[in-house]
Image 1 (cartoon, rainbow, N blue to C red):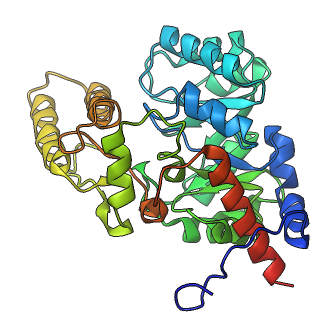
Image 2 (image 1 turned 120 degrees about the horizontal axis):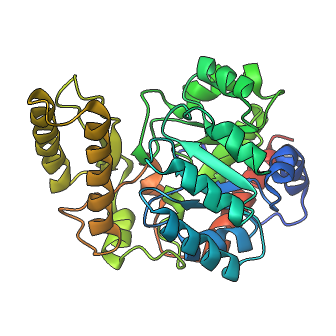
Length: 352
């Protein structure tokens, strides 16, 4: 046993009772995704691009492209490049507040993307119908039971419930509480994937037993060999502990800023100053609230790029979930997924 005996040491239990049980629990998820294991890659701007996404799908998981602030032209190229690297299913994550959401949906339809994930709030009118009309399956984020039921009525084909332990934009409620609130009430009616703070297979097994059909992990894949994240970015992850991944602070209550979880650095201070600047523009009537929110999103996109691509981990945003403490080395995606699967199988087999 490891630590204080609370977590069983993972052992390779290939073709074991545990693996058979895991396959059974993931069956609805793998059927929905068309993958070998029901492990979705979390959509991380600048990180979840063609190389990592295709690697996750090729390893049996389900990669998801992070569209973020991409233009339709950039997304078009990214999807095409991903298709040259894998013949297996992958999805595209779109932000609901993107000003060109309709055109991005059309790009996904052009490439016959089978799964579209909508993040960032309730979809604008017509978006759901447009996605489903193109033949894609729609996955939506549900941060509360009431919203989960509303999304189900609106036509969502699957839900992701993501707790505040996740990296990037977060809500106020933990993964464990969301799972208890939502899974017993809706999991029989719609596939639900759990996300936020998952770094080991034992947690995957637990959420599957609660009724989830699969999970979504982002932070765990950042230091994959196939990830294009800068060496400095990966080093910051490997050195960090869970307590280093902290949420941003809202400076002005009039500015509805969604908190972002990232590793503590100078950028967290800079963001406070940015909020004051945007709030000042609002006070002067120079911008509307929608534009203010968009400016904040563009700010984060730029700060994240500085860290991920340029390697500036002090004045860039090193978005990371609290599971960052479980990222201890750089390794191939296939090894990460294999370890997660073996840990989950061992945990299930130990139940007897």
